[in-house]
Length: 113
Image 1 (tube, helix red, strand yellow):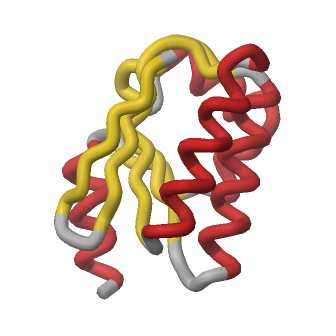
Image 2: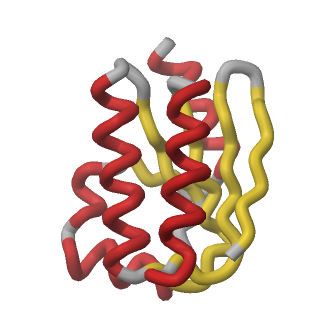
Image 3: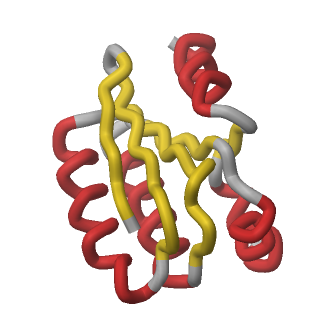
C-alpha cells in the first residue's frame, strides 16, 4: 500500500494505492492520525485501492468518528467495484459520503461551506 497526500486549499487529499489490509492498516492509521491532527476536511481517493479488509474499514470508520468529534468530515472518492463489495456487505457505506470522483468530493465541501 502507498499513501500520497496533497493539499487542495483547506482540504487534504489522501490517495490510497494498493491493498488496505491487516498488514498495512497500522501504517494507514498512523497516516490518518497525523492527517486528522492537522486537518478538518479529508478526502480519501480510493480510485487505486484494489482491496480492503475489515481492519482497513475499521480504520476508516475510526477516522470518520475522530473528524466528526472535531467538527470535520471525511469523504470517500473513486471507490472501485471490488472494495465496494466490502462496503456493501457490511453496510458501512451508510456512514460515509462516497463520491464517484475526487473532484466531486472536493466540490461537495464547497457546497457545505
